[in-house]
Image (cartoon, rainbow, N blue to C red):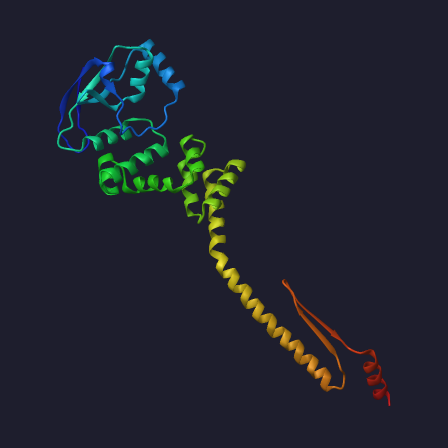
Length: 283
C-alpha cells in the first residue's frame, strides 16, 4: 500500500509504504501527549482488530534500537494484547526539523485526545521547543486564539480539569470560570453548574452576575463610609435641637451610644420641668 504525505513543516510529497515490523522492536514515544489509556477500550479495539484486521497502520520513526511510535499508540497496545509478532507500520524519516516536536504534533493531530491532554501537549511544545503560540498554530493549522483558549484552561483547579478530561463539562462551560478571581469562587461556581445541570448560556449568565458582584465590592464599602459620615451629621443635628430645648428653659438629658450596627440616642425630658412650663403659660 502506497500513498502521499505532506508532513508538518514541509510540503514535499513522498511515497509511503506499509511494512510489517517486529512488535518487539516498537516502543512508545516519550512525547505521547495522552496520559491515560482506557484499558476497556483497548480490549475492545483488540477484539475489533482480531475480527476485521488492522485497517490503519501505525506510524513510526527509526531510533537506535528499533522504532518509536509517532501515531497509533492504542493500536500498538491492542496488538500487544493479541500477542502479535508483527505490526503494519509506515516508517517515516523527518529530516530538517525537530523530531520530538514533529512526533508530538502528529499525536495532537491524529489521536482522539481530551481537552486537557491537548492543552498540555501545546504547553509542552511551547516550553520544550521554544515555540510561540503563533508558530504552533501555523504548524497545527489552527488559529492562535484556539491555542490560547486551550492553554488558559490549564489555569483552572485540578478538580475542574478532571471534569473536563472526563467529558462531564465542556470547554465552553469551563472558560467563563476563568473570569472569577479566586479558586474558591471557581469551585463554588462549578458545584452550582453540576448541581443545577446548567447549560452554557446559563453558566455564562451566572458567572457574569458573580463578576459584577466582584466589581461592586469596593464601591459598596465606600458607600458604607459615606453613610457613616452622614449619620454623624444627623447626630449633630439632634444635638443642636437639644441645645435649642435647653435655651428654652428645659433641661433635657441626652444619652448617646455608638453600637456596632447603629447609633442609639436617648433624650429624656424631666416631667416636672414640662409641668412648670405649662403652668407658666396658663398664668
